[in-house]
Amino acid sequence: MKFVACLLVVCSLAVGGCSTTAIKEVATSPNTFVACRAVDVASTIGILRLGGAELNPILAPLLHAGFGPFIIAELVITVGIMSIWDQLSSPQKVIVNGLSCAPAVWNSGVAAQMGAH
Image 1 (cartoon, one colour):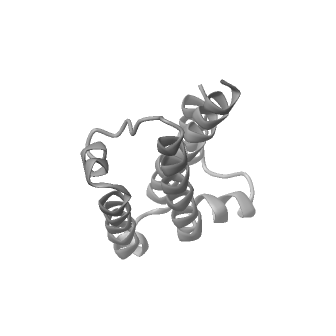
Image 2: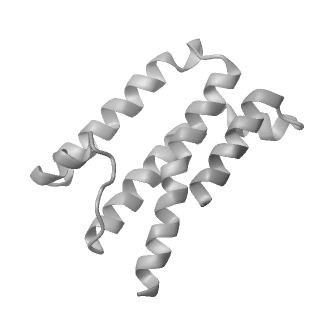
Image 3: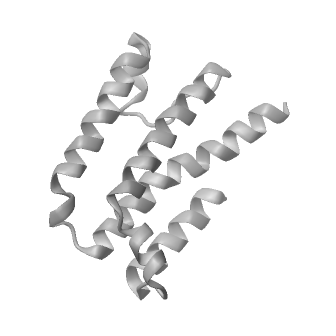
């Protein structure tokens, strides 16, 4: 449910624009992108250590070799997107940030549920 809510917010910001400069700055910031990527990786590793599973079918096989290949793949993705960041439009940056933050939001719900059991 949190994932859906996050995507709705991202889509509404991308389509309707932002009502304040501060929100727009955060929504289009490369710092937001990097922070969300880092939280996603850290929270994924935490969930895996609690016995959870990686749901991304592209990244999941990398975990068979340990966290190293998973972290390297995540870094490659992050660096790749950062290399084209300045070429993205503001709505594209909002969408990229939303899609990057959604897994971290999802993971927080999963971690909370796992911690409660």
